[in-house]
Every structure is written in structure tokens, then in C-alpha cells.
Amino acid sequence: MAALAAAGFVLAGCQPLSSGGGSTAHPPAANDCAPAPLDRSWFPAVPRVDNRFRPFLPGMEYVLDGSVLGPDGSRHAHRIETIVTQLTKLVDGVTTVVVFERDFQDGTMTESELALLAQDRQGAVWNLGEYPEVYDLGQLLGAPSAWISGVAGSRAGMEMVARPRVGDPPFQEGLAPAVGFKDCAVVYQSGQRVCVGGQCYDGVLVVDEFAPLNRREGHQRKYYAPNVGTIKVGAVGGADPEVLELTRAVHLCQPELVAAQELALAQDTRGYRVATDLFAGLPPASATLQAQPC
Image 1 (cartoon, rainbow, N blue to C red):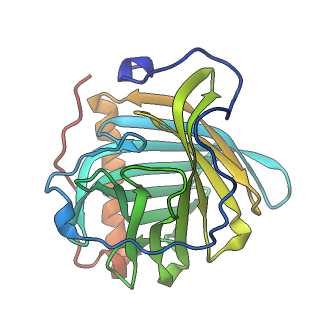
Image 2: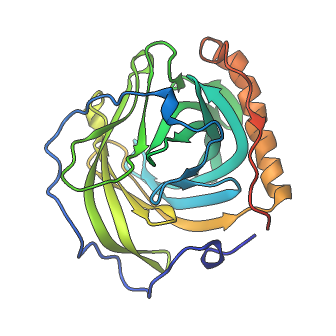
Image 3: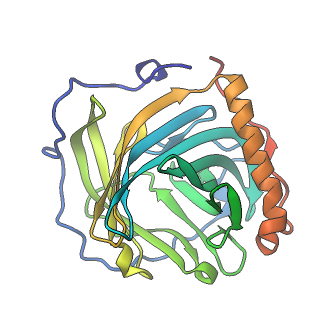
């Protein structure tokens, strides 16, 4: 594996967490967001997601560690492991990159998700579907929150706009009426200096996320470092707030990457049984991308 600095990330000298400097804004007053039109001609046949703030290059693994406040008022250890696979899947006429993400609470996996992402030619990153399987003590309970763009009224949304600027209107991250999903986001701050896990990052973008259909979730603040991606997740209100920080960002070598892809492929295959209405008619995921060699 390659270490964080060797992966091309620029680290500054360490100092305590800071949000000073750069452009800032008051908490957004907007309580909704407009859908973004999706034009399939905007997307290349071979996907590549290299947005400055949301890069998803094949072979990369990101680990966020922190805690979440449970219904009983106690905090529980929370980890999110994200691996960008070499897999692609055609969704709503767009070839997407398959991102394999697993959530762990107190060391036990509670969710395993396939996120289907693509970047348009202007540089905006789009979310075209999510297939999150829910687990309890190793047993698959189902995928009640799954959605696919173009199915059951669901619409793709933007994970990150091409040129994020403070003061721009909120953008929609996705819409799935059948499962009550609608997420919005607005650029909250830019040019920040933020330190997490003994590393400091300059030029950090802060995005405020909210769910108009579920106010009890409150707001989430996500911090994106240039050429790295998510380095911190914070909560503003909400019933079960979580706080996460980047603890690992490495390039996986082929044996580890292939092992993760096998799990992702198995999950994609299960989708045709667990979420038949969503997966019917979609071609299966396949290994068509190439990760950089170690």
C-alpha cells in the first residue's frame, strides 16, 4: 500500500482544528433544492471521477473513524470504509464507477453499500444510485433504502458541483420518492484550514447537507480537502449525530483490491434477488477500469 503523502496528497504543518480564513457564509436559510437535469450526452463512455474535491480513482481506499450518538444517548464507535473499485455499471444510460462502502458500529458491520457515481465533462460528480444492504449480526435484513436513477421516479443528483462557490443555490444530491429519499447540499465555506488525525489541509471546502423530507436528521457538515476528498464529517442538530475524521487514505495493491471487488460483485449479484424491481433490466457490474499499479 502507498501511504497518504505518497498518494499525491499535500499536507501542511499540523495545528489544532481551525475553520478560520477563506470564504464563509451564515448557516443556509434554504430548506429545499431544485432537481438537476440529467443529460446522458454529458458523460464519457469510460468514466473517470477526478473532481478536485470528490476524487474516486480506482484502487483508492478511504477510512473515516469516529462515533455516532445512539437512541440511548450513548456514543458508539463508527467506521466507514470506502473502496473505489475497477467495476463499472450502466445506470440510466450512464456508465458509472462502482464504489464499495461498508459501515461498522462497535466493530460490527451494519451496512454494505454500492454507490454508482459518474462525472460529467464539466467536472460535476453525479450519484446515479445506491444499493445499501442492512445487516444485523451478520444477517442480511434487506435493502429498504435502495434506489436507482430512472426507476420508480428516482432521479440522479450531484455529489459535487463542478465549480463549488459560496453563495450558489443548494443542489440536489438525489431523489427517490419511493423510499423517501431527497438530499440537498449547499456550499457553506471555502478556503478553510482543517486539521484531523495529525494532518492539516489547506483550501478545504465545507458543504452543508440536509434532508427536506426528514427534518429530524438535522444538518451534516462535510469537509473536503483538495485532491483528497472527505476528511471530516460533523453534525448540526439531528436525532443521531455522527462525527467522523479521515484516518486512512491509501492505494490498494491488486490482491486487496481484487478481494474487495469480489465482495462488491457478489453484492451486485444479490441485488437482482433482493431488489429485483430496481435491478431488473440493468446489466451486471463488470471489471472494465484499471487502477494505477502499486
